[in-house]
Length: 417
Image (cartoon, rainbow, N blue to C red; front, side, top):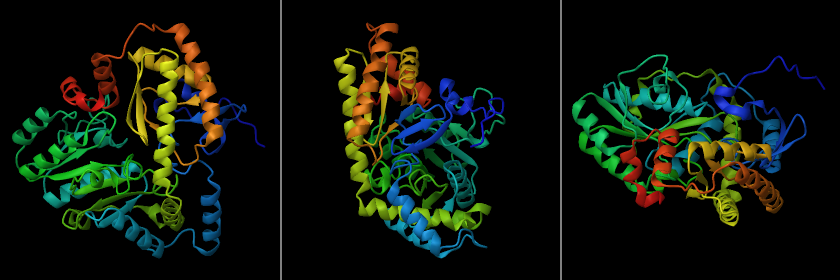
C-alpha cells in the first residue's frame, strides 16, 4: 500500500471545521468509519445526508455491480434510457412538479433553479433564506464575511416575514422568486405555507431547496407532506446513494424557463449515476427505507436525550426523527461538546444536523451509548453545568446555523420550544 505523505495534505479546514479536518478516513461500513490509524468513528451525519442506506451497503453494491455488467458507464448524450426511467420515478414521487432536470451536485441544482426562475419570469431578483450551496451567487452577507462578489439581485430575508414583506413591496415587478430552505427543527410548516401565500399574492415563483430533506423528511418531500405548492424544488442527497446526482423538479409552467436557459453538464453523460439512482429508489421502495430511517432516527434522538438527562447536562434535542439538532447553552458549550464527541469517536459538529440511516443497528447503538457516556463525562468536567438552554441560546444557535433574525427565531418558539 502506498504510504501517505503528511506534507501533501488536502487542507479542508474551511469545509470540515476545526479538528475534523485532521481525520483521514480509510473505509466505512454502515454508520461506522475507520481512519488511517485504525480509530473508529460513529457517523452522526450519514455522510452529510448522502448515504441514506449507510456506507458500503452490500445490497446496493451488489446490485450496482451486476447492473454495470450490462450497462454502459458513459454515453455520448445525457439523454439515456436510465435517465428517462429515473425521471419517471422522480416525477411520480413529486406529482405537482412533473418536469425533471438532472445535474451533479446540490449547489448545481440550486444555481440552476435560480437561472430557470429568471428565464421564466424575465426578472432578476431572488429573495432568499437559508443555505443554498457554495456557488458565488449565494456567498452574500451574512453567509460570507468577505464575499467574492456582491450580487444586489440576491436579497436575504433571514426567515423573517416582516423583512420579506418589505422586500416584496420595495422590489415589486423585479422579483423572479422566493428561494427558501426548510429547516424543520426550528421552523414549522406554517412558515413555508405563509411564504407560499405571499409568493402567490405578489406573483413570484416559490422555489424550495429540499437538497437535504427532499428524500429524507417524508415520501415526496417536505412540500408534499405539508401541502405546499412550490414552482421549483431542488433535490440531491439520497438520490443515488452518494454518487453525484441532483435535480430540479418543477411545474410544467415554471420549467419552461429551463428551455431557454443553458444548463449544460458534461458529466451527466455518466450513465452509471442514473443506474445508481434507479437502484437506490428501488431499494427505498422494496426495503421501506423511509420507515427505517425514521425508526433509527427516533432511537438516535432518544439515546441523546436520555444521555443528557441521565448526566444532568442542559441540552435541547429538537427536530424531525430523520434530521434533528442538539442545542447547548452557548456556542462555547456546543463546540466543547462536539470536540469531546470527536475525541471519543462520535463524528458530529456544532451547529450541525444529525441524520440517521438505515444501517444503524443494535451494535451501532450500543457502541454509541458507551462512547457518548465517556464524552459527556469529560464534557461535564470542563464546562459550566449551571448554564441553561434559554431563548437567548436558541437565538444564538439559529443566527449561526441558519442566519435568522432574533424575531424570526422567537416568533416560531411554539414549534421548537
